[in-house]
Length: 260
Image (tube, rainbow, N blue to C red; front, side, top):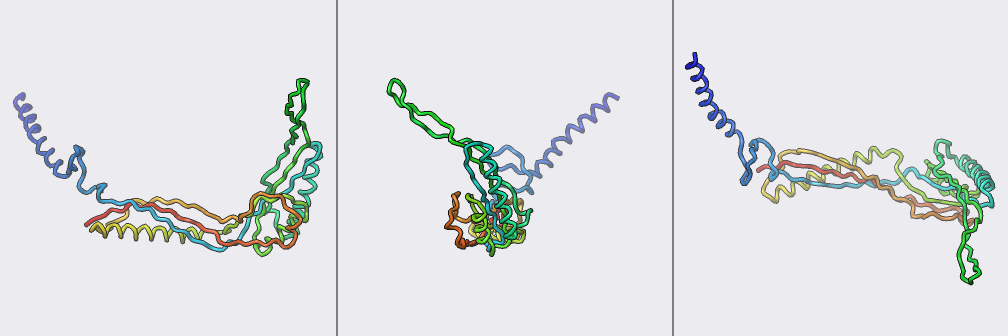
């Protein structure tokens, strides 16, 4: 019985090198590397990573206006009461301009003390600066969505006439930009393929297939060039507004496999 067992073990040991040899035939080791690589796997030297970007521009169909009131009074209570009264007038004017309540949202509300810097001379004759409470500043800002751009200038005028005295900016956008995103996405992919084919041809190869795709989007609205400012009465006369164009940029990164 012992002789039979020893014979079986010897047979198994003899078969192991043959099996290992067959397995090794299915792999090739890259030059200078001890790692075994399957011949059907994609090698780094047979791929190319390509990035492409495409931008689609359209005329905007919606605008976002951030404006409001800032009031200063001797006490905090008086400052808040003043801004509240002025802001109620702003909301009424916006409704009269055709802005729905759902398109108005408070975006900033603050109350802060304001100090004056006063220099006083001490007994030693040296002047020293001290802060003296001058009053309180209350601010209330609202962001308004204007769906009819033809009424944007009139809306700004109504804001001023109703008591609004601060304007933080006007941003233009596309209300539903899904179609624009898809168009930019398709254009970016087309450009990536064209670029990969160009490189492959220059290298004497051709594109075999796409291995991976990664994407990203950057919405790039063109804001109206208007910094935060105090609105003067001169804005009352038909404020001109130009929407220009807004754009969406699609970015795509594609890994291609190349072959001869």
